[in-house]
Length: 299
Length: 239
Image (tube, rainbow over all chains, first blue to last red; front, side, top):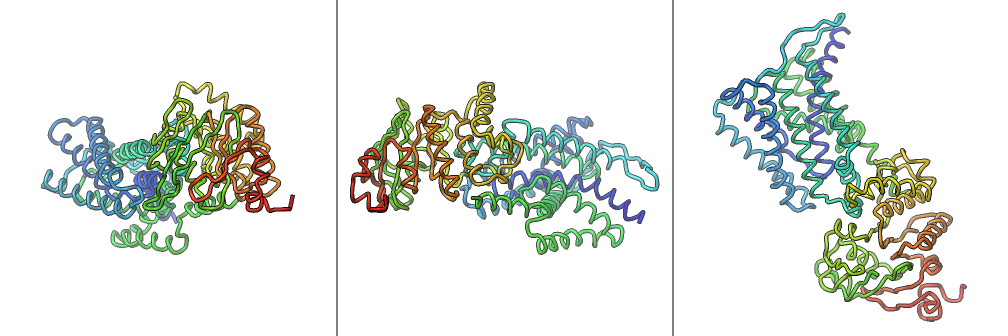
């Protein structure tokens, strides 16, 4: 039992990172109703830029954060212009495929720029073990978890307390109606992409910093974990993304403890598969679909 | 006030509006009647900039609205209450209303807050439910919300697309009461309706559309005197 609870604590700590990635996916999906598969790779490129600065110029962690986020945003905007702005709005498949193509392109770029594949990533947090009763947590995980909470609070403030945030939610809730209200949706999409890229850059930094290394596989990893966590929670749902991330973290931590690394990776896919069969809309997504349906049928 | 002159609007190769002209006068309720597929909604969409016209012109007072972007047209003061209400189901009632004022400049904020209060006074059920999500409202309340949301943009002319659609008869009466009250307070309205009987009660001027063209144009008395129309739209003999 203690082991299980310990795993849950670890899972929640690490799952918070998944939650951030899932939020990135779900926000973009919400406003565009399209998947941005190259979200992970754009974070990877940002992280490579960060580590490049770290190795060649400055050990200043804040500078590394800044470069990571800025390059992630720049790549994010590149992706948005190419895959979503340039491709027609109703061409869902075309923009998804083009985001996949850009993903491959970004990985090529990363391999050529940084041929050694694996690079150290600055550990922002000192690593110690903190005991809490019968349980323990690693300090870098606690720091990551707390910073994630801060980011979530900031994102919440942006979405629910500011005018541009309201526009993002309006476009996501009812694109047609927001058009009738005079909301310029292409500006909103651009803004959402920028915000999501900042979020992604910071999430990438937090995760990699706890890992203290970055590889070209990070793009694939981040896209998979983010997508799975989003699907678990329900596409387009913000609380769903957080729940899905935490659930994924907890299940993986337990699978790792009881079955080893192979079982951990399989468990994530198995979990998603089961969720899609039992509740295709995800943990909270179903409710949104039902609510929207009901809203139109009301007399 | 709002003048539509000889517009042609196409969906691909299909011509939905074939040179349609009409005028909505200031302070009046102008009503577009006609069967399904006559081009009523297409007319509203073309005015609102959701669809682009192929030729012809649209002017509001002295402003040329022809093929302006949708946000641009809202800023000029032409606001659409869409068919099926299209509220924001997951946002609260208050957020729905605030979103309606989105086209107004940021410095308008004090006036926007005052307008919000005004909407709540006009529609008390919305105030009671201000924190509820829009999707939980009843159909009639949603229609109120859609109208309130459009008013938040301070329209010079309000375009309403089938506000009675899918509502119970008693609620339809209420919605039409709201329409005539708004009009008495000086709001100009361009109304599209299938419910001819209700529309005739509030309209000052009627345009009958068929096949993308205006086939009749006059006031309700004139319309009721026209025997062909009487039979087709109002059910001959029943009143």
